[in-house]
Amino acid sequence: MYTQSFNVPDTTEPTGAKAPLSLVGVVSPLSEQDAAAQTRFDTKLNADQKIEPQDWMPEAYRKTLVRQISQHAHSEIVGMLPEGNWISRAPSLKRKAILIAKVQDEGGHGLYLYSAAETLGTSRDQMLADLHSGKAKYSSIFNYPTLTWADVGVIGWLVDGAAIMNQIPLCRCSYGPYARAMIRVCKEESFHQRQGYESLLTLMRGTAEQQAMVQDAVNRWWWKCLAMFGPPDSDSPNSVQGMRWGIKRISNDDLRQKFVDATVPQAEVLGVRLPDPDLKWNEARQHYDFGAIDWDEFWATVNGNGPCNKERLATRVKAHQEGQWVREAALAYAHKQAQKNSLKQEAA
Ligand code: 3HC
Image (cartoon, rainbow, N blue to C red):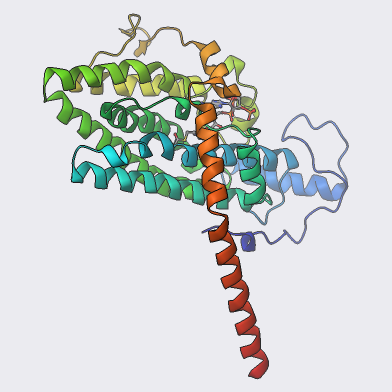
């Protein structure tokens, strides 16, 4: 979809030693050419236009995008694992077909996102090496186990619901390839959220045991989903600059609040209790108040010590190693085709 071929340099790209570090507060003096490029970049952002791969951009903007997009891609790929765990045990052919389609979509999202990150000059090999060595982050949420079939429904409803809340504003991200990839991702995520909710509605119309299974899954996933939006704004080192650059449009705390406000009525329709004694409507704020998130637990998980971190990485590394022959075969085929084409051209 997005390839390095998009990455044709701006003809007026500055040749100066170093790109400026940020949009505001630039400390080092800029060469005339760099200053002109920075002004063009700022003007585009201020006019809410997209920055494209061939445009000049500050090095820190590029690095921030590579960080965020690659983390996002890793989250999609690792996110296939908790639900993939249930494909062979789905309770009916219909549920199995839906789940296979959904897990496959997540793989596709990872691929669009790796391609979008590649337009910024990084390589897929490098991004995967960082994931496999444990250097790169991916979403905390995928380090928890899926213990029952209800977990699959709750992931659709709450995890994908939280993901959409975060990702809809990313459709307006200032970097063109990321914004465009997110449009398709969000459409598919919307189907994921609905299928999860519908599966839970079915279980909630079932036996007392099925209802209890849903409640148990909601109890285990609720707080993890709230933490998924990232640390509070006051502890979020990347937010201010990310928002200035138009990469992030809505802050972690505001998205979390939007998610809570949207989800409470859905829980009521479903007939489940959200496991928070402090959850209540605040008339003055016109929002739900909610209890304190366990940030120590969140950071332990982000830093590799959640219940499934080691298992998730080991599974990804094994899958990558086992796919080596496919990559080699594809390269050998491409090489053969290139040779054939050049022979044809010589003969013509
Ligand atoms: N899990 C793991 N790490 C997290 C995190 C989470 N839930 N939330 C924040 N962090 C990390 C950040 O990556 C950052 O680490 P770094 O500086 O070492 O890179 C650090 O915690 C501080 O957080 P900030 O708030 O300062 O970081 P950001 O400004 O980048 O905001 C974010 C974090 C909101 C996750 C933002 O990066 C973002 O919107 N990313 C794109 C969306 C995304 O990656 N979603 C992941 C879920 S995808 C998904 O769920 C798949 C779907 O199919 C279900």
